[in-house]
Image (cartoon, rainbow, N blue to C red):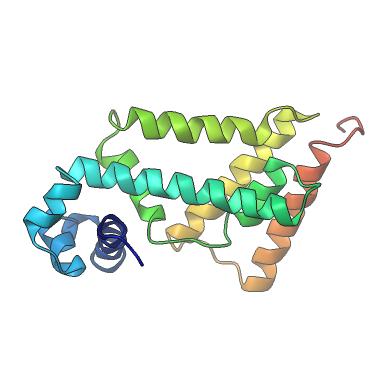
Amino acid sequence: MTNTREILLRAAARVVRDQGSKAFTLDAVAEVAGVSKGGLLYHFPSKDALVWAMAAERVDALRSQLDGYREANPAATLLEAYVATIDADQTDMDAAVLIAAAEQPRRGADVRADFAALLAQVTDGLTDPVLGDIVRLAADALWLTSLLHLDQFDDHRRDAVIGRLVELARRADSEDPPE
């Protein structure tokens, strides 16, 4: 069974998805979640706390996606897993990452540090870390353009782009010297 905290996080994400960030208020979240504002404040004492909890939830979900991919593909590097799953399960929680970064650029140091550490792990120890950085940044751009509905790829082209990025991710960790 889903707990109240999870219900509130999902409701907050739905508010952002359905109504936009300007409509993202504690009152709107409480209404969508079907709880009183006091009930919401019990779990999240401020809008800041709610936003950063949403961002932390997304980082945790990404970590779980990476772990799941690597369990199914034991030879995969973390970079390959990152690229292969970057677009697999965009959630409403992804918008929280953008809200958190845009509305509170100096807050959420712990979530930022956790996410930065995860991103550093993605390319850590690669044979060609620069190629790894390029691949990760391209995957990030793919995620962002999709989230903002800016990407013009059909599914076939998108799959081909992801496939090529996976190939490059593997090459970034190959023993062959970079070209």
